[in-house]
Image (cartoon, rainbow, N blue to C red; front, side, top):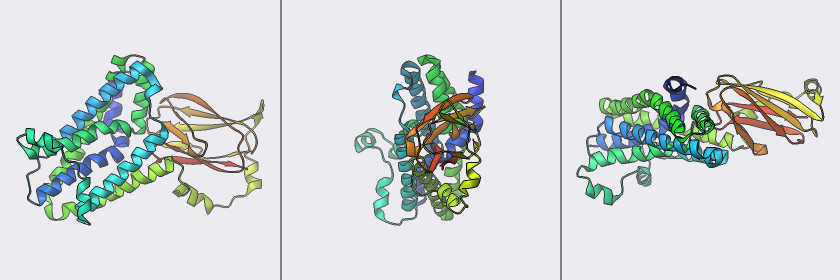
Length: 339
């Protein structure tokens, strides 16, 4: 893939798909600093926090791309770890929101501050505080990749070159800069202009983003309760009609196909016969969303798909029941019904 196309991917769909969790983290740390400014403790510069976040994110991804190109997929995080980090990110956003609303003094400790030995060496404590927290979170974003980022990481791995890997991820992250800078700058400017109502609005927004992040993480981890499971429980399960949709059996295997696009999975509901092994074919065509990180939590199976191509998963003989599948962020879901 040409670097120009990679940059455009980051500029468009890459920025959008990464905005929910990573943008929420950036907004949370900026609003926490804005709270101090609004309360009159210090003046918060809207540029420093955002630039610190973006520059450190760029450095982290360039280094990560170098390592991926050098060592390949051996150092990739497991889907369970990614989901757990996403869950933690959502909890952190909600805690920051509770701090903004002054629910309890204990939530103040969630605001990331530079260590004392650093602030003593830096003359301007305000400037060091503005930079430290977003810089740290910028580095940590490599642990919560969105679907498009995973596609770029797959490209970095397939390049088999540390230089190319660094260029691929670095170019992609540069493409996301405008959207993330806009989020950070606008968040800070709103804090200056609407001082009286800003904290409440920001807190509600962070709670919303936090719950989305938590829900997505739980779905990706195979939580027993999800919107998909609740809605399917209200639908009539006519086994006789569904049995007509059994896939053909070839050489002892059932064969089913799921088409993966940037908008999710099609079909999102499939039927299998119990006790027969299955070949699940996953076809992608220009897919750059979370959907390419395909997971079946109940079977502890998953694969990071290429943006375009075909991957086959061998499913074991399954007993009767519903087996949900989802992307790594829980944004796109579906179900395999075994009868």
